[in-house]
Length: 155
Image (cartoon, rainbow, N blue to C red):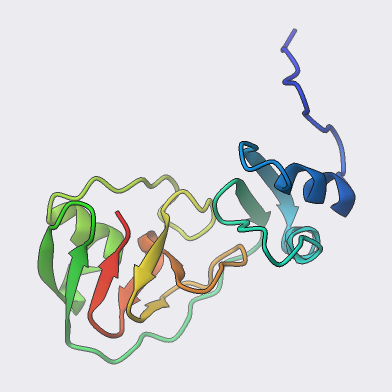
């Protein structure tokens, strides 16, 4: 038998459950369900709650391609490692260019669905696949985003 974690909520949680969890910054939560459910649950959180930090979500949906931005090259850097390189369209996503520059970046699905590669980015980036979850301003999914301007990843 599996062990139930303290504070775990089984079944369909209510907005109040998520709001209560958001009040404790030590909380890590994983919210999984259809896109509308995830948006509804996160939409009920207080504005000061930074849902990208303690909460992870995965929506069940069909991913749609977004329009490819027109940019030939951009300067990409990491503010923690200090690594930097020039991105071109042949380099692929921000995840791929970051890893090729030696930056250790987390990832899992590489399809914009799991949120593992979600990072803060200074500058402008565009998603080639519409993310399966809502993202706070200034955050992107590195696995499916490309720069539209020079960018610095918070990694």
